[in-house]
Image 1: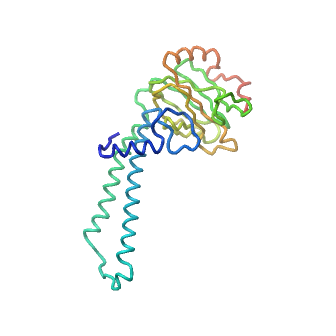
Image 2: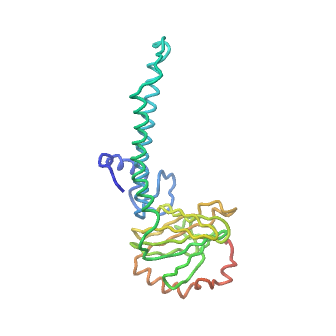
Image 3: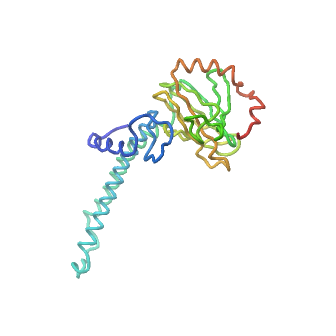
Length: 277
């Protein structure tokens, strides 16, 4: 995304204030202000665009506040007993029309570039499919053996040390780093939404339709998300857990996963009947 050099120092200050820099974090933190650190190029550009908008709206708010204060003081009744009869001012009318248009152009250019960048990757190296159910996710790997598995939330009593509550699943999505990954999202019953904040991804799963998104994970680690659609009474209990590994580790995992998990379209009936655990 295009960056303006004169805004560079301000971007840095806002990044510190909003937590967009520093050590990589893959989950919400107590008292967190701002976004999770970006784990993908998409999220990095979203954070940058957010910082630009934050400065624009802050400067506009300050300008309007100062203008209102000046008008209240300058044109108060005690200092302006005889008000002006002027109803038009050509220069002011041109200014308050042209300046907002210029501001919108400054916002629109990077906005459209980012929308096109987020839309899809033209040459995906890996495709996975995320399927929303009430209330868990299923995943298919058509490019690596066509296997599938379900991911249920781990109950509080079964959590191990270091595992975040309401975000841990029994099976993690394993993906390689430095790879353009295409995600096909759908649902079997109601609307769901596959969202991982540190990836800058939030895509609705609609029954009978397949929506597409993509990301490229920069660093290995564990990343968490949740369904972000009001899909029923257990809406808050269908998390997303992604484990990013090297390409060599991913290849080894897929070999193991092909033996461990059922193939797509031939899901273990006992696994499918588990329901929410």
